[in-house]
Amino acid sequence: MWAVIQDHVNGNLLFAGTEFGVFTSVDGGQRWVQLKGGMPVAQARDMTIQKRENDLVVATFGRGFYVLDDYSPLRELATLSEASPLNDAASLLPLRDAYIYSQTGLAPAGTAGIGPMSGNWAAPNPPYGAVFTYSVKADLPSTDKLVLTISDDAGKQIRRLDLDKTSGLRRIAWNLRGEAPATPAGGPPAGFGGGGGRGGNLAALVAPGRYRGTLGRLAGDKVTPIGPAQSFSVLPIELK
Image (cartoon, rainbow, N blue to C red; front, side, top):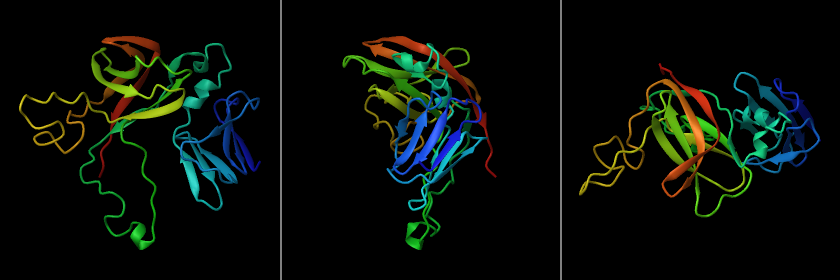
């Protein structure tokens, strides 16, 4: 073991850098689970916490460094109570606010000759929009779907996303757009022509404000909510 650090908000949440990857404990060190999700089995020699964004930064001294963006949902699992989300069939964990801005004119890394061909390398940015973290305790029946319903502050449904329903701790990003408009009869397929781009969600961006996400089990046409909803804000930001 090379490094052990403690969360600055919940002391039961620990991270350990070892010869063979990074591990976390939500119960003060009694049990440990390896963090994967793209992190290789490599030496984790040093770690630090970026407190403002709740990011875990890991230095491997040989394979660069890695950043776990916004690990704050793990604090919810470190409550050590019977009400812990780990005891629920599925749970949506708290999330941080999302920023909305125009992506027009943002060129991908490398378009100005500063990409891998010139010897420089850049990691992809976190996904645009609101990032939801959810846990699934056990696989749902094959006939049911696990869905995330996003509503505005008045309760109006804005978007519904299908989720991976296999057991584990997972993430999904919402691109801050509503449901794609229906394709008119005889018209072009969704994502082509007249709607702002090829191959994507053609709905307009939502307005800044308060929103909430709710997990649900979809059986046929009926959605049964699972666990409490999580509220968050969509905040405007101007790029200059």
